Length: 231
Image (cartoon, rainbow, N blue to C red; front, side):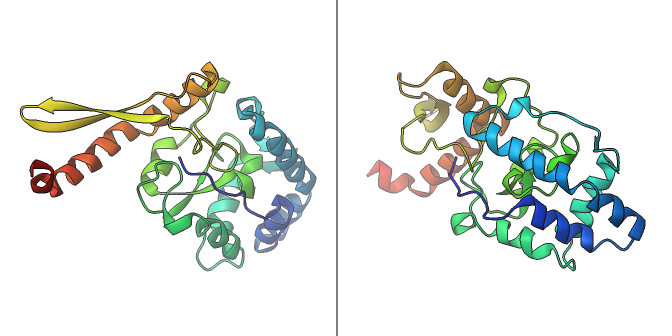
């Protein structure tokens, strides 16, 4: 997993830009009426994320008494993510923040979308909150879908708040499969790590199917370098 800096954007400004582009005056009025709830949700998220407590973020069906969860989902897809929208510039600013356009979740595939770390279908107050939007490849985004952590150990790594690049925790063993070397990847963090962090990196690998992905890429690399390795 690759660490990224959080977007230097505030939810209030992004939400206002999205709401302001809505054609329905009735819906626009209701959206402007819940700006304080959107701002409060961002504050709560920012306090929970650094200490790996996002599993405690409340699940709601609507934002305040004015806006439904479905309307918040549509706000994201119809304004922030829509190509012709004036709010699209915020989407693009976050999407291009990944170095070399590599997905921070898997570290292998290229970014082609934004992923809601906590899904907008379950956490509508975070539908357009920048710190909940992560540049990601389509595969990781699709695999996560409605990912809802129930415990701290279930939390996959958050690119903005979790930095595991300083230690060696991902390892592989070489296995003989009928004369063909095969690599099996697994998490083996240092003994100084807490059991929670061991569980989290393991959950990250397994939830996103990364051992299989890495093994496939390693097999191709071994095949391409077979002769030099034999020599």
